[in-house]
Length: 274
Image (cartoon, rainbow, N blue to C red; front, side, top):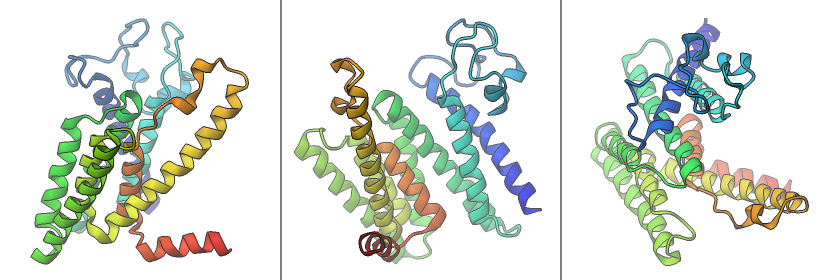
């Protein structure tokens, strides 16, 4: 029975992911998110229903348009899969029995995760975090801090965590004049503090920095390898790497698995001393 529930949650998540792709593609383009039908970006052919089945259509069409044969961005498949996986994991985490509270929290954190996913992909594509979504994330996080943390003391702790996190990232942005960190990252950190407080917010930030460092190192070595075969203008060492996706990743991991600072410290020491 549980397998069926998780499968349904994954399928539902991929449908949401398909819609999120439309949002990412059409945001700030003047196109309607809800009224304009989906079309191939290369030949403008209208897509029929069987070309819009999440994940399956992309696989069956081998990542190409059925009409003109042009390649479809793998972003579509990635967002649908990530949304599906996140939805299934949230159901696994929160939906224990048929409790209204659990269903509410599952729905709430699913919406938060979808917002983080949209911000991440948009940041990767355009190197900017859209205010519409970051302010939505901050607002939802503040509502959570005020009404769902259990007490006034916890609410104040979450709000204070948001202010501290924002101050730290804002300081990095201000001192470096935007070279180390973007102002959008500082805004996300405000929402992270409101949502997770210190106990989960600090692990989320540590995971964000660790994952960013690992990917950065991989990109450095990859760029050095490919630089042997590519012209200098393609040298990715000089390119910027958005940090928003790593903040989102750390936040989602913290929501799902609730790592403590001691857990992370233990993992760090285990890696050092074996």
